[in-house]
Length: 119
View 1 (cartoon, helix red, strand yellow):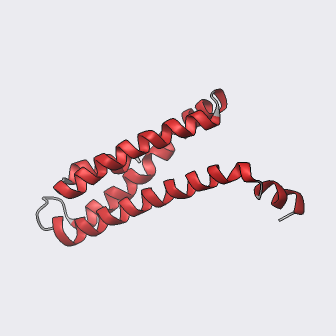
View 2 (cartoon, rainbow, N blue to C red):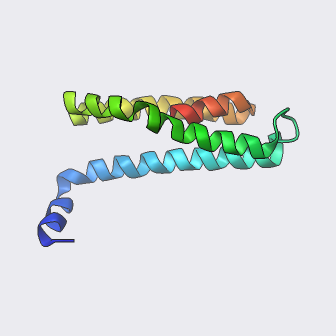
């Protein structure tokens, strides 16, 4: 890494962005893994779909929004102010996480898969 790039990345104004990205990635991965464990060990025998298929479906639903919405998200990011956009997205992420907590506690497979797509 060049000295100029390292100097820019260590500036204080980049830290909120780094923290937001880190927490968003942790949130998504923790929910995905919690759902996979719950499906494999608890809900797999209750569901008409096999646990292996559910885990594969969860992985596909986790990746699908990146393919579907990446171009639109890039256009929106270019059009609007980044800090306001990050605040709105993080607020929606909190609401989706609350919906995910409900889906996990009620053991709703379809609710968990929907939340996984929304994350």
